[in-house]
Image (tube, rainbow, N blue to C red; front, top):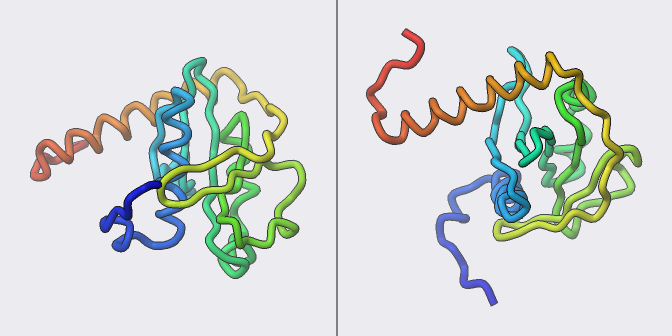
Length: 153
């Protein structure tokens, strides 16, 4: 049995889902970034870069209202090879589009329930996104090491 982690109490419900998703994806050899911006004006909950260069997007929805209020999710489809929803066990999954993937998650772990079909990115877009992913990850790491550093000039 997993012991309660008090740091989870500081997270919003969607952030708890994202934590469990990232833990599960890490076990599958994916590197994850939460709240990643593939393009100006867009922000995905989790972007995951796989060992073969595949890019997955996971949107974490903590309630019916959270899902219904998200009008931008279809715009994320062009930035990934696979698109998933991450929800908890109480979420009304009948709301979710059938063409997308489904992950059940909590703050500790997650499980892929439905694997969506691959919709392969164009090589040029994959290159741009992979570069953005790497730069964002490096910038976050540097920010942890040196919070006073000015990135980008």
